[in-house]
Image (tube, rainbow, N blue to C red; front, side):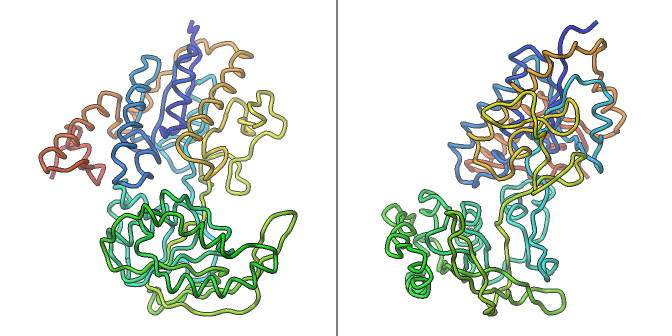
Length: 435
């Protein structure tokens, strides 16, 4: 008889890795399933590529987690209705509990006309593209001369950073539903692109926004100063790209010719105070902006096809949790299945938050396990995965892949190198033969 609890953790981003570590340290045997070949999730594929010190620091922590003898790693395995294993199939293997930390893998759209035009994208896909996550790394994107990014947070700034510095497009327009006082980006992130800010256009936008802001008691001068806070530490310009804001504007539809984007229509907004919150309200006045690319940076949602009920872009949590932590429910509506990180609350916080949330989710799982007897027989994951007839990545494979990429970076004289397809990664560690 097995006296050790056996837990499946789905997703190997920060929430999954630190959740797995918590469970392993408490004495559980953890099978960590990951869609990607490499662990890290958004910490590997969501942080801007040139943040080498931050990324390497995180990778060191992740390596230490995977070195835990109570954790087994299974990369290149998709869990979900259309995956290698569905949720019921995973449960049928006999795990005592399942912790879902698969992030927010769904794509959040507004449901506007023209979202299917060539040149209209979701920020997540673009971020994965420039961070070389297969298969997004192999997708063809149309980054035209004039690009609109819908949103006002750090993801908008990251995408603008890529368009300004790497693509060096002619113009990047940040379309912001509310006003200058509601932007959400960090000053530190703005340092990368503020040298390209079109100051004349900003002053024109501020002038246009003043009556709307003053009507609800906002201070336009303070909002402008906040936007420009990054100027003293601005990175030098590397392109002639002009970056500007289009405030108080909501996308209505995208228009195109022969299936290719040519314009975005926006509606001008007013601002109202509702229960202490600033809300945007459409005025009915609409106008067209010529663009070749529109990228929506409007947050995330979980994968509808995963196998758990979804509401408001998140998996449904138990309203009366038996094992709450910090006032949060980590229990799904399925017995023995828990959620953590962005699977619990999409787009919430960065790596530190995901780490804490994954750890708390694991503590909730452990409390649940104390009410159960460990499964009588061991869970034979390897035999089930072998039947899939595809390469399955282990902890040792991850180490070999990292060594191969490090060697390639040295050979090319780069700070970092990533293979951009699964086939290249698998070939580099000898799991498939190159054509």
